[in-house]
Image (cartoon, rainbow over all chains, first blue to last red; front, side, top):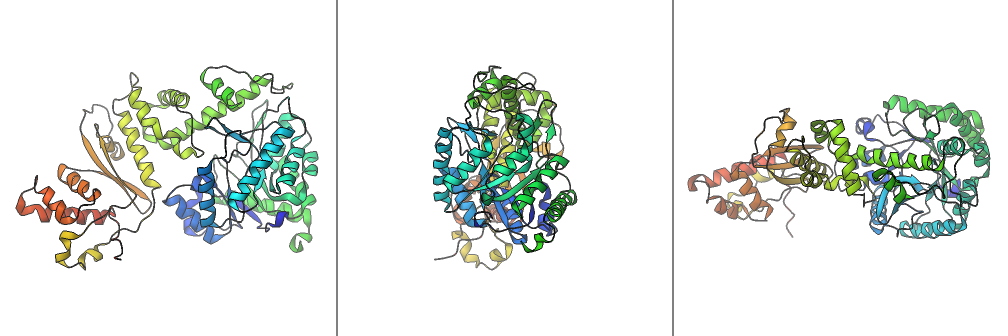
Length: 281
Length: 249
């Protein structure tokens, strides 16, 4: 990659349900992705689990509350907590979402989509600059699943995301499931999205399951990766080569063995897509 | 948009139709409504996770109603959901609902305090060996310090008994002082009598063992003060409630 980030292989989101395997040392995986906010606490079992995971494998921090697109001021306390956590756990990288999540100091705790306008672009780029200065590192910004788009949007999401990355010199966390969910919800071609995001900026790929609500797909992270998303993952790997990939599973969390089966499937898809190149890339 | 989402939840009012694109599957308001539903569901889930025993006591319907009102009255003001439920106990106390058990606010306070203890800073506990190797003459001037993962809670109902499986029906008000602490990863709680409460108050105030004994002499027979205070200290050490002595300069 991808902005100089290492290739870590195939990892999983670190979740409380699997802390027993973490403490037992049986959670064998290439790397872990930890939700930053879950570990912005002062002590106790979660921090012990994170420290143990870090002994087992590299850890990346993935935030959900940076609210990079909000018109609220960046939360200094949040950034301080994140910087402190990063100094302690020494993550492979830090990521968050291309979205907004607060207004007037009130948090939605959701990944709300932005209007894709020049004004929003300048706003997001300026804030990423400041976040990267505080954290003293480049961050990855992830595309979100969305259920609405704005009348005012002047460019497609992939163009907006690419411009954010180019202007702020950040990386991209490409969530292939989110591309698929949004493609179905808004009627665009997911392959066009994948072909249009700047490949040299992509430092990580997310895979996850979603649910079909009839009128729309919902990004629920409560199921296995669906066949369409596996196909898109293969297309992504064919285009990008090896990219560190993680499975997100946040509700109806399965046993460790089931989660690892998804990880191994992702590894197999990568191998099929790249053939012998996978070992040497 | 967030204001509209929260308004959609609290008032059923929407105002984004002119901003949001519609298509054949969903019109603009239906798209906003997706976010409004998720907003309420997510925050309700957090309250259930933080207050499982309150949820069990109230039942799904009554808890959902209380959560709905709390979400409307207390929007989240912290980036982390960890703190969203911080005012729920006070909210339940200030908004008693007919049919709610009268102890539910106390139960919520206990659940929140247990959470605070669960992720409080780590600290190495004082072990008995350190105490046994201490010269007897050092006892009067020794200051014991509770670990950070320790709280005292004063309530009007014996809600801690719910953890023992005791149903709350038929309870009468009963003043209770609880000590709540973490040993390893587990959170414990224990009711305190007047002697233990007073002794622990002195420890928390920074008094040394001698001052603690002097204070206890007001309510304990003089011949038994030192043994009583020493017994309490040993119990707290066994429970892992006291931290290691600070290193001498």
